[in-house]
Length: 288
Image (tube, rainbow, N blue to C red; front, side, top):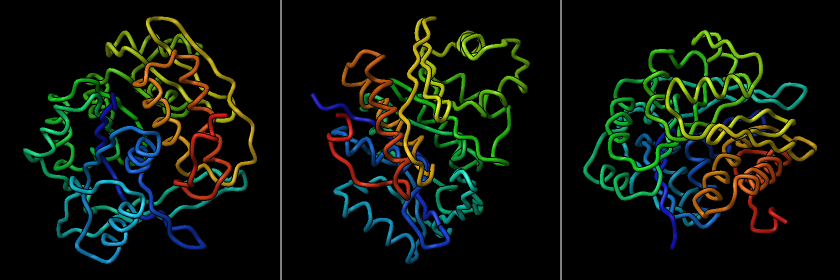
């Protein structure tokens, strides 16, 4: 039976020196879930402008449903992307934009209530309007997956505590874990100790930690799993973590064991890192 996942968050244009590419971490997750056979639905907002129309056309060209993407009088989001010598991306994120004002509707409440999982992130909570919508929808969700996705300066530890407390599954990277260690005064000296402390403090059932080229860890029921990752020549890191998370979610919902879930997620994440932009095409061959 096909699983359904609802994601909420940013839809935008990543603006590179050579041109723009459709993106936004939440949209990337939703689109990758769709590519992997999940009934993926996406709640967001665009402006009534050319950039917004082009994003809807992009999703439609990928056979992705757009009925939960709202339109308002703010501008469609754009993000300036800078790549360093190691092809690591940094982002300049404009505010406010259309996805800062995602409205709660009967339709998106019903979608979340009926879904197998709900995916949310901290960036979309930078504005009170979208934050309140997410907090309301979290009350309706069966399985709550938090992609912490810290983008300075758009978060506070107070908001993060609320979002962490709601999570059943958390995805965090090594830099975000160090931030949480500092802000929450965690005392662990190893990644495993820190993940166990986070799990205990916020009652999180599963935590996935990505560590770049060193792969990823999963803490589940006090047991730590590790995958060393796949070595690739990096084109850029834009969307690699999003495709990793989407594959992790899809594989978990399909019932694969955690070792296999991690392997599949690392394969897709490394493939996307080897390509330019957040949403390169791929099929089942990426898992072989």
